[in-house]
Amino acid sequence: MATILAIETSCDETAVAIVKNREVYSSIVASQIAVHRNYGGVVPEVASRQHLENIDHCIAQALSETNLDWQDIDGVAATCAPGLVGALLVGVTAAKTLASLHQKPFLGIHHLEGHIYASYLSEPQLEPPFLCLLVSGGHTSWIYVKDCGNYEVLGRTRDDAAGEAFDKVARLLHLGYPGGPEIDRVAKTGNPQRFALPEGKIGLPEGGYHPYDCSFSGLKTAVLRLVEKLQQQGNGDLPVEDIAASFQETVARSLTKRAIACATDFSLKTIVVGGGVAANSCLRKHLKAAAAVHGFIVHFPPLKFCTDNAAMIGCAAADHFNRGHRSNLTLGVKSRMSVTDVMELY
Ligand code: KG4
Ligand code: ZN
Image (cartoon, rainbow, N blue to C red; front, side, top):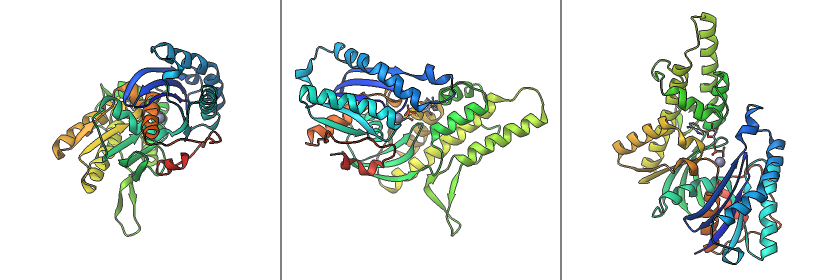
C-alpha cells in the first residue's frame, strides 16, 4: 500500500492530490480557465506563471484536508510528460524539492497514463486487460491496457484531438472557452440529424481505410464551410444549436465506432473512457448504447476525474511505487512522449 502526494501541472490546471493506491484522500484543482478565457485558449507563459502562484497553496491545502503529515507519505509524484514544458517544470521541480527535503522517492508520471488510471478511482475492482478510449484536449487514442506501464496504441487521430476540434468549432460558432462544455450545452436543444458531416476516415492506398485511426481536421473544415454557406444564404441567425448537435453527433459516432471495433478485434470485454471529452453527454449516450448492444462493460469516470486532476496521477504513481519503480532526480520534462514509452521514466 502506497500513499502518494501527486502534482499535475501539464496544462492549465494546478492540481495536487493525496492518494492511497486507488483511494483519494484529497484532490485540489486550481483551475486557470478564467485567466485563459480572456485569450480564447491556453497561453503557455501565463500558465507557467499561474502554476507558480498556485502550487504552494495547493500542496498545503491537499495536506491539510487529510490527517496525514510527511511521515505518512511514501512517495512524491508529478506529471513530467507530455505537456507544456514551462508548466510541467513547475510541478516536477516542486515534487523533486519535496522528495529531497523529506527524503521520499520521486516518480515522474506520464499524463496519459494518469488519464487511464482515473477509471480505477471510481472502479477500484477494475483490472487490465481493457480498452481505454482516451479523449482529451491534446490527445485522442484507443489504447490496449495490458498492465501497469504496458500499453499498445491501437488507433489515434492523425491531426486534431477530439477536444481540440470541440474548442475550434466552438470558437467558430462564437461560443465560450473551453468549447467542449459549451457545445454540449447548446447541442441539447439542437437537431443532430440536420447537417450531414464527414466522419474522417483515414484512406489506405488500396482503397480501404484504417479502421482505428481517425481525423478531425476534415470535419472541422466541413463545419467552417457549412457556417460560411449559411452566412452567405443569410436566412437570419445561424442555427448554432443544430450545427453544434450535428458536429457532436459525428464526433461521438466516430469515437464509439472505433472503440467497439478495437474491443471486438482484441477480445477486450471492458471499455473505459478518460480525458476531458469523456464528460460529453452525446459520447456517453452513444458508447453506453453500443456497449450494451455488443455486450461490453463501459466505465466513465466521474467528471472531476475526467478533466485534469492530480488524483489520477497519484493513482498511477502508487501502482508504479508498489512495483518498485522509482525515477531519478535528474529526470527531465518532455513536451511529447508516447504512452508506450512510460517505462523509460524509471
Ligand atoms: O483532459 P483535459 O482536461 O485536458 C487535456 O489533457 O487536454 O481535456 C480538456 C478538453 C477540452 O478540449 C474541453 O473542451 C474538453 O476536454 N471537454 C469537453 C467537455 N468537457 C470538457 N468536450 C466535449 N464535451 C464536454 N462536455
Ligand atoms: Zn489531460
